[in-house]
Image 1 (cartoon, rainbow, N blue to C red):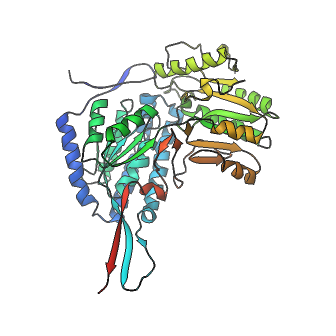
Image 2 (cartoon, rainbow, N blue to C red):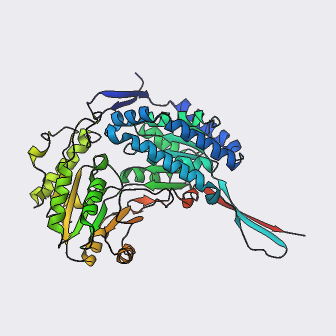
Image 3 (cartoon, one colour):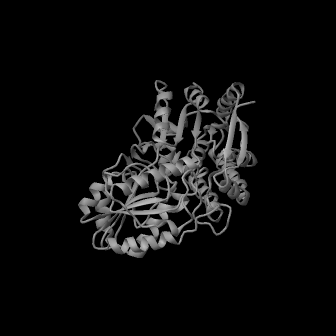
Amino acid sequence: MTQGINTISPIDNSVYVRRNYASKDEINKVLGTARKAQESWKATPLSERKELCSRAVDAFVAEKEAIAEEICWQMGRPICSAAGEVAGMEERSRAMIKLADQGLATIKLEEKEGFERWIQREAIGVVFVVAPWNYPYLTAINAIMPAILAGNSVVLKHSAQTPLCAERLHQAFIEGGIPEGVFQYLHLCHADTESVIKDERVNYIAFTGSVPGGAMVEKAAAGRFIGIGLELGGKDPAYVRADADLSHAVDTTMDGAFYNSGQSCCGIERVYVHESIHDEFIARAVDWVKALKLGRSDEKETTLGPVVRAKAADFVRDQIKEAISQGAVPHIAENDFPKDEPGSAYLPPQVLSNVDHGMRVMTEESFGPVVGIQKVSSDEEAIKLMNDSEYGLTASIFTSDIDKGVNLGQQVETGTFFINRCDYLDPELAWTGIKNSGHGCTLSVMGFDSLTRPKSFHIKKL
């Protein structure tokens, strides 16, 4: 039997997708085709590239209902919100198409007598995109769209949990009229993924995933002197100041913590609340969470689906159990949600107070429906705790004093800083992280930088 992918749906543990892994010959053919196709694609006028990409987005959006259902079954997103990813993919794609002229523009230098000088951006070649399951289209398109617009060819390797996403994206670009070989996908095992990273025909790696996965990419690419973009997750904090709009802060942070069952790299995983409003915040947050409906993702009334697999749920269960044994106070009782069964992907949400940084739930990425809420007495204490992390993807402060919030934001170690918002990517802003959240940049005009190389022209007139 050919070894391959068996995608187990977290909804009912059934096998939802079966696919064979690409053979060595198929991998070689895809990489060869990608290299050859890129030579002509980079010479295609940007206006034509933009038009083809726009048509691909149109084709993708036209299948939004079927795509939403596939997301629901592959990774467990509730059907009531699964279509939101299609809208997000469209928003990001159209933003990058709009920004392409600026992001890829030639840099004209001031006149110098007897000379002409400019710097232009050139495509780097073949871009290998490795995408995760939690936001299967959003994470992938962050690199795919600017790479193709810039004149590169793309090979996509998607998660074994969401293989249909690679096929859907490929089909959309084909329907949009993309030339053969410019955008392809491969279903790969780990060993073959490493082999592709090492292949001399690949010129850039865009990886979204875990810290160990990012380390694997860097190790596999070592000595090749190629660009690597790594988006590796986070333990994102929020700080609710005493002057915050409490209702807004509760609604926003709890949505940021529990949307997608907490399986978001930029979701809120820890909240620091000023002592003067701490108890009221806890009470309102618990009411908010109790209103969630835990159930099968394919049922319309469900607002909290299962996590991606039982092993992931057990990891979060262990974090919660350990925190409680260390003194954390749980606010969601067993009878508030269906009985929690170890070994099940259906994990009831949990709100913990009386937490501190001696607990893993406040320092180790949870990636599940749990949030720790810690009392603080000052801005200084909050900032110190926010920065006490190996991650630095996003951070949020809730306050009515915008100037003070911005001043505090200058002190927070993060890639994106929010005031009165969280868990959102504005495609016109740079998406980047620091520390173990990775390096590199996608989205915004800066998102084209790593997917191109500068070429200087220095011409002396005789």
